[in-house]
Image 1 (spheres, rainbow, N blue to C red):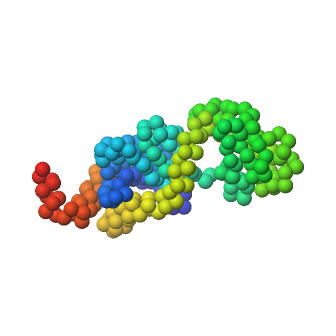
Image 2: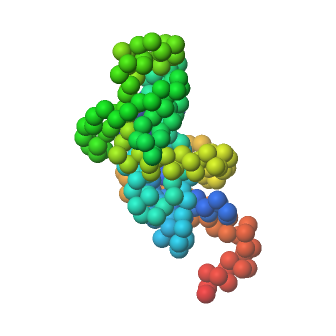
Image 3: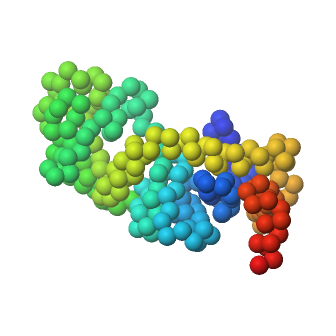
Length: 240
C-alpha cells in the first residue's frame, strides 16, 4: 500500500531508484517501502558502480535510525533529513535540535542554558533509550511556555545517537544536499512519467510491474548513455 500526496492510502507500488549524481544514470531500481530500503539500495548501488566509498542522499521519507546505523556499519555515508513528526514542534515548542548535547559530560544544555543530566533508560525495539532532565529548573524557567506543558522537559537519546549526530553534521556541511537529490532522482521519475503519459503501469502484480519499470529504466539509461558517449562509442562499448 503506497500513499498519495495527501497522506491517504493508495493501492499501488512504491518505486525506489538509486541514481548517480554525476551522469544521472539509474544504478538500482526496486519496489518497496522507503523507510526500510536505505541500506539495501545503498549496498546495491555500491555493487553496481564498484565504488569503494559511497554517499547516499535521500529525502526524509527514508529516515530511520536503524537504517542510518546499518549504513554506517556497512561503510556507507548516509545524508537523510530527520523526520519532523514531533507533536511539540507542531505546537511551537522547542525541538530536540534546540538542545545541545555535550558528549564529554554526557548531558544536554537547554535553550535557557540549564544542564539536563542522565535520568534513566529503557529498552524497546530500537535499543536502549536514555532520558535526560533537570528536576528543578523547569518550574521557574521563563522559557517553559515555549518548551513543555508538562512539569519538566525530558530529552530522549538513542544509544546509537552519535551516528545520527554525525549524519546531521554531514548534512549541515552540505546545505545543497536536498537540491542535489531533487535534481538527480526527481528528474528521472519526471522523465519516465512523461514517457508513460502521466498514467499508470500497464501491468499488474509485483513481478510484472517490476519488469515494466526495469524496461523504462533501461530505455532511460540508454538515452543517457548515448547523450554522454554518443551512439558509436556506446555500440563499441557494448560489443567489447
